[in-house]
Length: 290
Image (tube, rainbow, N blue to C red):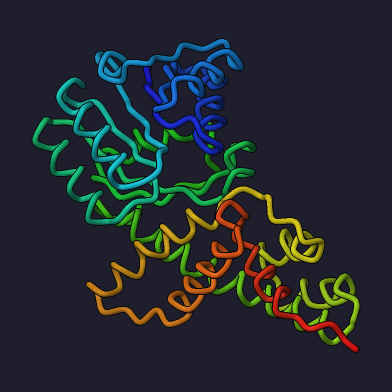
């Protein structure tokens, strides 16, 4: 199968690499040609600076880009050039509204579209252990599963177009609350002058335990915030969820509050810090003991 993989950033580059190792014919594309060339050199693989030329004859297009407008641009350009029955899989986190719009556009061209946002971060992409939430026709789900298998540990069809993106909103809402809770617990332990390592040992195996606690408590404690998913992107995702909540009537008081906290982290210069940097905001407010 000939695949075009568009978006060779910290997530897309390793995902496309897994496809190559699984035996797929992959052509890499990135808006920054230099990044595509670097990926091609690292993997001894083909890349293209011309998106329209690349997608002609491709059986599948996989996207892992930035925002709704990026997806709309590439899918619109591809839909006029890809053959009927070809497949577009979008791993970008976007609005559900955009996913439904792209599904309708592709359907008018007899092309299949699946919104398939992922969870697992940069480490999951590198290790081929991402979780995928899919919104697509039931009849195309097996194709999506086979195509994404080289870099996923699980894939769940949530429903029709847009359902995958809606599930990803749930994911980000849950993460926001979890990270803030852990940041506050660690901050509290420091203010109380008890050993954070012992606290982690005591509570991580009980009801308070989570992936975020096991993987980010220690790095938060060391003031390290360079672990993949950036605050700028988290605010984009929470903005999508909050906008959707205004439509479906959901009450997201914690998510809205944490979004404000992330805006404060951005103001501290932490736009590219990872999401656990909520702790840095709290520590900046901690008064030294006299």
